[in-house]
Length: 135
Length: 325
Image: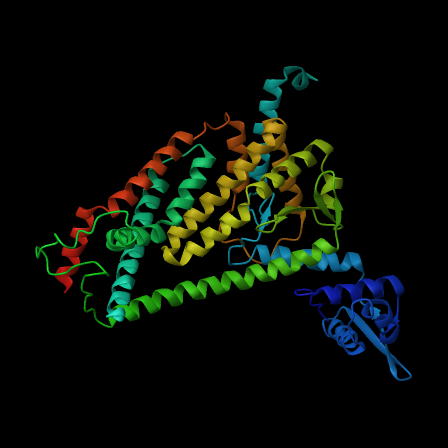
Protein backbone atom coordinates (compact mmCIF):
# COMPACT_ATOMS: atom_id res chain seq x y z
CA UNK A 1 0.00 0.00 0.00
CA UNK A 2 1.36 3.40 -0.98
CA UNK A 3 1.45 5.90 1.88
CA UNK A 4 -0.38 9.19 1.40
CA UNK A 5 1.72 12.01 2.83
CA UNK A 6 0.22 14.88 0.86
CA UNK A 7 -1.78 16.59 3.57
CA UNK A 8 -0.76 15.83 7.13
CA UNK A 9 -2.27 18.11 9.76
CA UNK A 10 -0.86 19.16 13.13
CA UNK A 11 -2.77 16.51 15.09
CA UNK A 12 -1.78 13.77 12.65
CA UNK A 13 1.87 14.77 13.06
CA UNK A 14 1.46 14.80 16.87
CA UNK A 15 0.00 11.27 16.74
CA UNK A 16 2.85 10.05 14.54
CA UNK A 17 5.43 11.61 16.88
CA UNK A 18 3.68 9.87 19.79
CA UNK A 19 3.74 6.45 18.10
CA UNK A 20 7.40 6.89 17.07
CA UNK A 21 8.30 7.64 20.68
CA UNK A 22 6.14 5.03 22.40
CA UNK A 23 5.96 2.16 19.92
CA UNK A 24 2.69 0.14 19.58
CA UNK A 25 0.00 2.40 21.04
CA UNK A 26 -3.63 2.23 22.05
CA UNK A 27 -5.95 5.19 21.70
CA UNK A 28 -6.86 5.49 25.38
CA UNK A 29 -3.25 6.10 26.45
CA UNK A 30 -2.55 8.32 23.43
CA UNK A 31 -5.55 10.49 24.32
CA UNK A 32 -4.16 10.98 27.86
CA UNK A 33 -0.82 12.09 26.43
CA UNK A 34 -1.75 14.22 23.44
CA UNK A 35 -5.52 14.77 23.65
CA UNK A 36 -6.05 16.10 27.17
CA UNK A 37 -3.53 18.92 26.90
CA UNK A 38 -5.10 19.99 23.60
CA UNK A 39 -8.62 19.78 25.01
CA UNK A 40 -9.77 17.32 22.35
CA UNK A 41 -12.01 14.31 22.82
CA UNK A 42 -11.16 10.62 22.71
CA UNK A 43 -13.17 10.36 19.48
CA UNK A 44 -11.05 13.02 17.73
CA UNK A 45 -7.86 11.16 18.65
CA UNK A 46 -9.44 7.88 17.54
CA UNK A 47 -10.43 9.30 14.15
CA UNK A 48 -6.92 10.75 13.70
CA UNK A 49 -5.39 7.30 14.31
CA UNK A 50 -7.91 5.79 11.86
CA UNK A 51 -7.08 8.44 9.23
CA UNK A 52 -3.35 7.72 9.53
CA UNK A 53 -4.09 4.01 9.20
CA UNK A 54 -6.12 4.69 6.04
CA UNK A 55 -3.27 6.84 4.70
CA UNK A 56 -0.94 3.86 5.10
CA UNK A 57 1.23 5.49 7.77
CA UNK A 58 0.11 3.21 10.64
CA UNK A 59 -0.77 -0.49 10.83
CA UNK A 60 -3.24 -1.84 13.37
CA UNK A 61 -4.07 -5.11 15.09
CA UNK A 62 -6.87 -5.98 17.47
CA UNK A 63 -6.12 -6.92 21.07
CA UNK A 64 -9.32 -7.90 22.92
CA UNK A 65 -11.62 -4.92 22.11
CA UNK A 66 -9.00 -2.27 21.34
CA UNK A 67 -6.93 -1.53 18.27
CA UNK A 68 -3.19 -1.30 18.74
CA UNK A 69 -1.49 0.98 16.22
CA UNK A 70 2.10 0.66 15.06
CA UNK A 71 4.09 3.01 12.83
CA UNK A 72 4.45 1.74 9.28
CA UNK A 73 7.10 4.32 8.44
CA UNK A 74 9.69 5.87 10.75
CA UNK A 75 10.62 9.55 10.84
CA UNK A 76 13.34 9.21 8.18
CA UNK A 77 11.12 7.19 5.83
CA UNK A 78 8.32 9.74 6.17
CA UNK A 79 10.76 12.55 5.40
CA UNK A 80 12.02 10.71 2.30
CA UNK A 81 8.46 10.06 1.13
CA UNK A 82 7.62 13.72 1.51
CA UNK A 83 10.80 14.90 -0.22
CA UNK A 84 10.09 12.52 -3.12
CA UNK A 85 6.56 13.84 -3.45
CA UNK A 86 7.76 17.44 -3.22
CA UNK A 87 10.29 16.87 -6.01
CA UNK A 88 7.57 15.32 -8.21
CA UNK A 89 5.27 18.21 -7.38
CA UNK A 90 7.89 20.86 -8.16
CA UNK A 91 8.91 19.19 -11.43
CA UNK A 92 5.31 18.75 -12.59
CA UNK A 93 3.74 20.03 -15.77
CA UNK A 94 2.48 23.18 -14.10
CA UNK A 95 5.12 25.71 -13.03
CA UNK A 96 5.72 25.80 -9.29
CA UNK A 97 5.82 29.13 -7.52
CA UNK A 98 5.98 28.12 -3.87
CA UNK A 99 9.53 26.82 -3.97
CA UNK A 100 12.93 28.05 -5.21
CA UNK A 101 15.47 25.26 -5.63
CA UNK A 102 19.24 25.98 -5.76
CA UNK A 103 19.45 23.91 -8.94
CA UNK A 104 16.29 23.11 -10.82
CA UNK A 105 15.17 19.56 -9.94
CA UNK A 106 14.70 18.74 -13.62
CA UNK A 107 17.53 20.71 -15.19
CA UNK A 108 18.44 18.62 -18.20
CA UNK A 109 22.09 19.60 -18.71
CA UNK A 110 23.89 16.49 -20.04
CA UNK A 111 27.23 14.97 -19.00
CA UNK A 112 29.03 16.63 -21.92
CA UNK A 113 27.74 20.04 -20.89
CA UNK A 114 28.88 19.44 -17.32
CA UNK A 115 32.35 18.32 -18.47
CA UNK A 116 32.75 21.34 -20.76
CA UNK A 117 31.65 23.77 -18.05
CA UNK A 118 33.90 22.15 -15.44
CA UNK A 119 36.87 22.45 -17.80
CA UNK A 120 36.03 26.10 -18.44
CA UNK A 121 35.87 26.89 -14.71
CA UNK A 122 39.08 24.90 -14.02
CA UNK A 123 40.91 26.79 -16.80
CA UNK A 124 39.79 30.10 -15.32
CA UNK A 125 40.91 28.96 -11.88
CA UNK A 126 44.34 28.00 -13.31
CA UNK A 127 44.71 31.34 -15.05
CA UNK A 128 43.92 33.15 -11.78
CA UNK A 129 46.31 30.98 -9.82
CA UNK A 130 49.06 29.66 -12.19
CA UNK A 131 50.97 27.84 -9.40
CA UNK A 132 47.96 25.61 -8.77
CA UNK A 133 47.87 24.61 -12.45
CA UNK A 134 51.52 23.50 -12.48
CA UNK A 135 51.33 21.35 -9.35
CA UNK B 1 -27.95 53.33 -16.82
CA UNK B 2 -25.61 51.62 -14.28
CA UNK B 3 -25.54 48.48 -16.43
CA UNK B 4 -24.55 50.62 -19.42
CA UNK B 5 -21.57 52.11 -17.52
CA UNK B 6 -20.61 48.67 -16.24
CA UNK B 7 -20.64 47.31 -19.80
CA UNK B 8 -18.52 50.24 -20.93
CA UNK B 9 -16.03 49.65 -18.08
CA UNK B 10 -15.79 45.99 -19.07
CA UNK B 11 -15.30 46.90 -22.72
CA UNK B 12 -12.50 49.34 -21.89
CA UNK B 13 -10.81 46.91 -19.46
CA UNK B 14 -10.99 44.09 -22.02
CA UNK B 15 -9.64 46.31 -24.80
CA UNK B 16 -6.77 47.38 -22.53
CA UNK B 17 -5.99 43.78 -21.63
CA UNK B 18 -5.98 42.73 -25.29
CA UNK B 19 -3.81 45.70 -26.22
CA UNK B 20 -1.38 44.86 -23.38
CA UNK B 21 -1.35 41.21 -24.45
CA UNK B 22 -0.42 42.29 -27.98
CA UNK B 23 2.29 44.74 -26.85
CA UNK B 24 3.74 42.16 -24.49
CA UNK B 25 3.80 39.49 -27.22
CA UNK B 26 5.46 41.79 -29.79
CA UNK B 27 8.13 43.06 -27.35
CA UNK B 28 8.82 39.49 -26.15
CA UNK B 29 9.30 38.20 -29.71
CA UNK B 30 11.65 41.12 -30.45
CA UNK B 31 13.52 40.58 -27.16
CA UNK B 32 13.95 36.86 -27.83
CA UNK B 33 15.25 37.44 -31.36
CA UNK B 34 17.36 40.59 -31.09
CA UNK B 35 18.09 41.79 -27.56
CA UNK B 36 20.66 40.42 -25.13
CA UNK B 37 20.30 41.88 -21.65
CA UNK B 38 23.32 41.27 -19.42
CA UNK B 39 22.01 42.79 -16.23
CA UNK B 40 19.80 40.18 -14.52
CA UNK B 41 18.11 42.83 -12.33
CA UNK B 42 16.99 44.73 -15.42
CA UNK B 43 15.94 41.49 -17.12
CA UNK B 44 13.81 40.48 -14.11
CA UNK B 45 12.14 43.91 -13.97
CA UNK B 46 11.43 43.90 -17.70
CA UNK B 47 9.94 40.39 -17.52
CA UNK B 48 7.73 41.45 -14.62
CA UNK B 49 6.69 44.64 -16.42
CA UNK B 50 5.81 42.80 -19.64
CA UNK B 51 3.93 40.14 -17.69
CA UNK B 52 1.83 42.80 -16.02
CA UNK B 53 1.36 44.77 -19.25
CA UNK B 54 -2.25 43.62 -19.93
CA UNK B 55 -3.28 44.62 -16.41
CA UNK B 56 -1.42 47.94 -16.67
CA UNK B 57 -2.84 48.88 -20.06
CA UNK B 58 -6.35 47.91 -18.92
CA UNK B 59 -5.84 50.22 -15.94
CA UNK B 60 -4.44 53.03 -18.13
CA UNK B 61 -7.40 52.82 -20.50
CA UNK B 62 -9.83 53.02 -17.59
CA UNK B 63 -7.83 55.95 -16.17
CA UNK B 64 -8.07 57.69 -19.55
CA UNK B 65 -11.82 57.14 -19.70
CA UNK B 66 -12.82 57.97 -16.16
CA UNK B 67 -9.76 59.88 -14.90
CA UNK B 68 -11.12 63.41 -15.64
CA UNK B 69 -14.48 62.82 -13.94
CA UNK B 70 -12.90 61.05 -10.93
CA UNK B 71 -10.28 63.81 -10.58
CA UNK B 72 -13.06 66.40 -10.80
CA UNK B 73 -15.02 64.53 -8.10
CA UNK B 74 -12.03 64.97 -5.74
CA UNK B 75 -11.57 68.59 -6.79
CA UNK B 76 -8.17 68.00 -8.44
CA UNK B 77 -9.16 69.30 -11.91
CA UNK B 78 -11.88 71.60 -13.19
CA UNK B 79 -15.00 70.12 -14.75
CA UNK B 80 -14.63 70.11 -18.54
CA UNK B 81 -18.20 68.98 -19.20
CA UNK B 82 -19.57 72.55 -19.49
CA UNK B 83 -17.26 73.32 -22.39
CA UNK B 84 -17.65 69.87 -23.87
CA UNK B 85 -19.70 70.94 -26.88
CA UNK B 86 -21.08 68.43 -29.35
CA UNK B 87 -17.94 67.71 -31.40
CA UNK B 88 -18.64 64.03 -30.86
CA UNK B 89 -21.89 62.33 -29.87
CA UNK B 90 -20.62 60.43 -26.87
CA UNK B 91 -19.74 62.09 -23.56
CA UNK B 92 -17.42 59.93 -21.40
CA UNK B 93 -18.30 61.20 -17.91
CA UNK B 94 -20.21 59.18 -15.35
CA UNK B 95 -21.28 62.39 -13.59
CA UNK B 96 -22.94 64.21 -16.50
CA UNK B 97 -22.43 62.00 -19.51
CA UNK B 98 -24.39 59.30 -21.25
CA UNK B 99 -23.55 55.63 -21.22
CA UNK B 100 -23.28 53.69 -24.44
CA UNK B 101 -25.49 50.90 -25.75
CA UNK B 102 -23.36 47.83 -26.34
CA UNK B 103 -24.42 44.36 -27.38
CA UNK B 104 -24.35 41.13 -25.36
CA UNK B 105 -20.94 40.30 -26.80
CA UNK B 106 -19.38 42.50 -24.09
CA UNK B 107 -20.90 40.26 -21.38
CA UNK B 108 -19.87 37.10 -23.22
CA UNK B 109 -16.31 38.35 -23.84
CA UNK B 110 -15.77 39.44 -20.26
CA UNK B 111 -17.33 36.22 -18.92
CA UNK B 112 -14.94 34.13 -21.06
CA UNK B 113 -11.91 36.17 -19.98
CA UNK B 114 -12.94 36.01 -16.31
CA UNK B 115 -13.48 32.24 -16.57
CA UNK B 116 -10.00 31.79 -18.05
CA UNK B 117 -8.45 33.89 -15.27
CA UNK B 118 -10.37 32.15 -12.45
CA UNK B 119 -9.65 28.67 -13.80
CA UNK B 120 -5.93 29.41 -13.95
CA UNK B 121 -5.87 31.01 -10.51
CA UNK B 122 -7.66 28.03 -8.96
CA UNK B 123 -5.05 25.68 -10.51
CA UNK B 124 -2.21 27.79 -9.12
CA UNK B 125 -3.95 27.92 -5.72
CA UNK B 126 -4.44 24.13 -5.57
CA UNK B 127 -0.85 23.35 -6.51
CA UNK B 128 0.59 26.00 -4.20
CA UNK B 129 -1.54 24.81 -1.28
CA UNK B 130 -0.38 21.22 -1.84
CA UNK B 131 3.30 22.21 -1.97
CA UNK B 132 2.92 24.42 1.09
CA UNK B 133 1.19 21.61 2.99
CA UNK B 134 4.04 19.22 2.20
CA UNK B 135 6.73 21.73 3.06
CA UNK B 136 5.09 22.77 6.34
CA UNK B 137 5.16 19.13 7.47
CA UNK B 138 8.75 18.79 6.26
CA UNK B 139 9.69 21.83 8.33
CA UNK B 140 8.24 20.10 11.40
CA UNK B 141 10.48 17.12 10.70
CA UNK B 142 13.58 19.28 10.25
CA UNK B 143 16.11 20.85 12.64
CA UNK B 144 16.44 24.61 12.70
CA UNK B 145 19.97 26.00 12.89
CA UNK B 146 19.59 29.48 14.36
CA UNK B 147 23.11 30.61 13.50
CA UNK B 148 22.69 30.01 9.74
CA UNK B 149 18.89 30.39 9.89
CA UNK B 150 18.56 27.18 7.90
CA UNK B 151 16.17 24.24 8.35
CA UNK B 152 18.16 21.02 7.92
CA UNK B 153 16.10 18.09 6.63
CA UNK B 154 17.29 14.54 7.33
CA UNK B 155 17.32 13.04 3.83
CA UNK B 156 19.47 10.84 1.61
CA UNK B 157 18.71 13.15 -1.32
CA UNK B 158 20.83 16.22 -1.99
CA UNK B 159 18.70 19.34 -2.24
CA UNK B 160 18.40 22.96 -1.16
CA UNK B 161 15.42 25.23 -1.59
CA UNK B 162 13.60 28.23 -0.21
CA UNK B 163 9.93 27.87 0.53
CA UNK B 164 7.20 30.38 1.36
CA UNK B 165 5.96 33.74 0.15
CA UNK B 166 5.95 36.20 3.06
CA UNK B 167 8.35 34.53 5.50
CA UNK B 168 10.44 32.31 3.23
CA UNK B 169 12.55 29.60 4.87
CA UNK B 170 15.76 28.04 3.62
CA UNK B 171 15.82 24.22 3.72
CA UNK B 172 18.91 22.10 3.09
CA UNK B 173 19.20 18.31 3.22
CA UNK B 174 21.72 16.60 5.47
CA UNK B 175 22.97 14.68 2.42
CA UNK B 176 23.95 17.94 0.75
CA UNK B 177 25.86 18.97 3.89
CA UNK B 178 27.82 15.71 3.63
CA UNK B 179 28.53 16.06 -0.10
CA UNK B 180 29.62 19.71 -0.31
CA UNK B 181 32.59 21.25 1.46
CA UNK B 182 32.09 24.04 4.00
CA UNK B 183 32.72 26.89 1.53
CA UNK B 184 30.40 25.45 -1.10
CA UNK B 185 27.72 25.03 1.56
CA UNK B 186 28.07 28.71 2.49
CA UNK B 187 27.56 29.59 -1.19
CA UNK B 188 24.33 27.58 -1.26
CA UNK B 189 23.13 29.21 1.97
CA UNK B 190 23.97 32.73 0.71
CA UNK B 191 22.16 32.01 -2.58
CA UNK B 192 19.04 30.71 -0.88
CA UNK B 193 18.99 33.53 1.68
CA UNK B 194 18.98 35.99 -1.20
CA UNK B 195 15.87 34.24 -2.60
CA UNK B 196 14.30 34.63 0.83
CA UNK B 197 15.31 38.29 1.23
CA UNK B 198 13.96 39.31 -2.18
CA UNK B 199 10.82 37.18 -1.74
CA UNK B 200 11.24 35.61 -5.15
CA UNK B 201 8.41 33.17 -4.47
CA UNK B 202 5.99 36.08 -4.19
CA UNK B 203 7.25 37.64 -7.44
CA UNK B 204 6.96 34.31 -9.23
CA UNK B 205 3.43 33.98 -7.88
CA UNK B 206 2.60 37.40 -9.39
CA UNK B 207 3.99 36.34 -12.79
CA UNK B 208 1.93 33.16 -12.59
CA UNK B 209 -1.23 35.12 -11.71
CA UNK B 210 -0.73 37.37 -14.76
CA UNK B 211 -0.36 34.32 -17.03
CA UNK B 212 -3.98 33.98 -18.23
CA UNK B 213 -3.86 37.54 -19.59
CA UNK B 214 -0.89 36.71 -21.83
CA UNK B 215 -0.39 34.46 -24.84
CA UNK B 216 0.95 31.08 -23.61
CA UNK B 217 4.26 31.44 -25.50
CA UNK B 218 4.76 34.96 -24.15
CA UNK B 219 4.15 33.83 -20.58
CA UNK B 220 6.47 30.84 -20.97
CA UNK B 221 9.28 33.03 -22.30
CA UNK B 222 8.84 35.76 -19.67
CA UNK B 223 8.55 33.30 -16.77
CA UNK B 224 11.71 31.48 -17.90
CA UNK B 225 13.64 34.76 -18.28
CA UNK B 226 12.40 35.92 -14.90
CA UNK B 227 13.34 32.67 -13.19
CA UNK B 228 16.80 32.60 -14.76
CA UNK B 229 17.48 36.23 -13.88
CA UNK B 230 16.43 35.64 -10.24
CA UNK B 231 18.83 32.68 -10.05
CA UNK B 232 21.60 34.83 -11.54
CA UNK B 233 20.91 37.61 -9.03
CA UNK B 234 21.14 35.12 -6.16
CA UNK B 235 24.40 33.79 -7.65
CA UNK B 236 25.72 37.37 -7.73
CA UNK B 237 24.71 37.83 -4.08
CA UNK B 238 26.59 34.64 -3.16
CA UNK B 239 29.58 35.82 -5.22
CA UNK B 240 29.76 38.98 -3.11
CA UNK B 241 30.51 36.90 -0.01
CA UNK B 242 32.74 34.35 -1.82
CA UNK B 243 34.51 34.42 -5.19
CA UNK B 244 32.66 34.04 -8.49
CA UNK B 245 34.50 30.87 -9.50
CA UNK B 246 33.57 29.17 -6.23
CA UNK B 247 29.90 29.92 -6.95
CA UNK B 248 30.26 28.45 -10.46
CA UNK B 249 32.02 25.37 -9.03
CA UNK B 250 29.27 24.94 -6.44
CA UNK B 251 26.54 25.09 -9.08
CA UNK B 252 28.33 22.40 -11.09
CA UNK B 253 29.01 20.21 -8.04
CA UNK B 254 25.37 20.52 -7.01
CA UNK B 255 24.16 19.81 -10.55
CA UNK B 256 26.28 16.64 -10.65
CA UNK B 257 24.82 15.52 -7.31
CA UNK B 258 21.30 16.15 -8.51
CA UNK B 259 21.86 14.09 -11.64
CA UNK B 260 22.60 11.08 -9.43
CA UNK B 261 19.22 11.40 -7.69
CA UNK B 262 16.11 9.63 -8.98
CA UNK B 263 14.76 11.99 -11.60
CA UNK B 264 11.21 13.29 -11.35
CA UNK B 265 8.72 11.60 -13.64
CA UNK B 266 7.83 14.87 -15.40
CA UNK B 267 10.03 17.23 -17.36
CA UNK B 268 9.82 20.78 -16.14
CA UNK B 269 7.86 23.04 -18.45
CA UNK B 270 10.41 25.81 -18.29
CA UNK B 271 13.77 26.64 -16.71
CA UNK B 272 15.69 23.78 -18.29
CA UNK B 273 19.45 24.08 -18.77
CA UNK B 274 19.71 27.05 -16.44
CA UNK B 275 23.04 25.71 -15.13
CA UNK B 276 24.86 26.48 -18.37
CA UNK B 277 23.69 30.09 -18.51
CA UNK B 278 24.35 30.67 -14.82
CA UNK B 279 27.92 29.38 -15.02
CA UNK B 280 28.69 31.41 -18.16
CA UNK B 281 27.26 34.49 -16.52
CA UNK B 282 29.50 33.99 -13.47
CA UNK B 283 32.59 33.58 -15.67
CA UNK B 284 31.89 36.94 -17.25
CA UNK B 285 32.39 40.25 -15.42
CA UNK B 286 29.82 41.28 -12.82
CA UNK B 287 26.83 42.85 -14.59
CA UNK B 288 26.49 46.62 -14.73
CA UNK B 289 23.65 47.95 -12.64
CA UNK B 290 20.61 48.92 -14.70
CA UNK B 291 19.40 51.67 -12.33
CA UNK B 292 19.39 54.15 -15.23
CA UNK B 293 16.95 51.98 -17.17
CA UNK B 294 14.73 51.53 -14.13
CA UNK B 295 14.58 55.30 -13.69
CA UNK B 296 13.72 55.77 -17.38
CA UNK B 297 10.96 53.15 -17.25
CA UNK B 298 9.52 54.70 -14.06
CA UNK B 299 9.51 58.08 -15.82
CA UNK B 300 7.86 56.52 -18.87
CA UNK B 301 5.19 54.87 -16.71
CA UNK B 302 4.42 58.13 -14.90
CA UNK B 303 4.21 60.00 -18.24
CA UNK B 304 1.83 57.38 -19.63
CA UNK B 305 -0.40 57.68 -16.57
CA UNK B 306 -0.41 61.47 -16.92
CA UNK B 307 -1.08 61.32 -20.67
CA UNK B 308 -3.88 58.80 -20.23
CA UNK B 309 -5.81 61.26 -18.07
CA UNK B 310 -5.06 64.17 -20.40
CA UNK B 311 -8.06 65.82 -22.04
CA UNK B 312 -6.92 65.10 -25.63
CA UNK B 313 -6.62 61.36 -24.95
CA UNK B 314 -9.94 61.44 -23.13
CA UNK B 315 -11.62 63.18 -26.09
CA UNK B 316 -10.02 60.78 -28.56
CA UNK B 317 -11.52 57.88 -26.63
CA UNK B 318 -14.91 59.60 -26.63
CA UNK B 319 -14.68 60.03 -30.40
CA UNK B 320 -13.74 56.37 -30.83
CA UNK B 321 -16.56 55.15 -28.60
CA UNK B 322 -18.95 57.60 -30.26
CA UNK B 323 -18.33 55.79 -33.55
CA UNK B 324 -19.39 52.54 -31.90
CA UNK B 325 -22.58 54.18 -30.73
